[in-house]
Length: 229
Image (cartoon, rainbow, N blue to C red; front, side):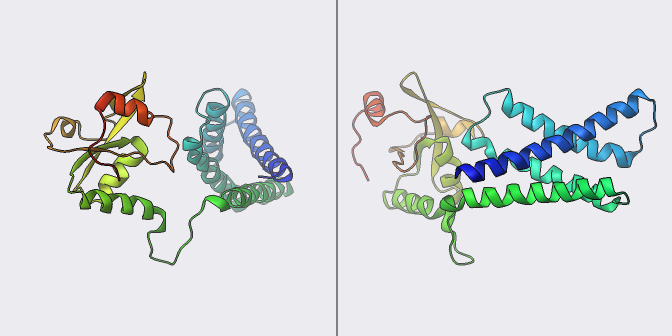
């Protein structure tokens, strides 16, 4: 993402944050003056507070990781609701101006995101499962090996199990202290102890997963594999 585009995104986010602050301050002033606040006023304020919570959570914690950026869509969702509120009640110039600014900032954010993600998008013919082509190839390779139980990192486990129709169990693991451990999150824990005459460990060189031990560490723990594919 270029420098100018980063500045544009920062400007859009600053605008959104300003509107959020405006809504919250307005509610506090109303409460301080003991002015009755109807539901139509509290609704956009609630979503403004939700947006503020998301921003503060990322700014003051360790959540800022590429795997959690998808939660920023909450900002777009909330912006759409607040925009609808102002457009529906845009009787004054101030509200029309706020609605226009919000629309520009939200559309700008979406356009910048689409531009920045262009290199990561997999576009194919309608109806083709382009995004899971690699996963389907993995499932077919394991099926050819006639193995029904194996291990993988979290990001490769559930999706491959699902795409195999439940025929193959890709059990989630995590690397801690140089050792591979079971990571039974969102999984049937009993499958880990189920007997299997053969098993496998999936290592995808195209995915840099910090929760996966290195090949030497895996071999040191489990031994040299009988077969590699």
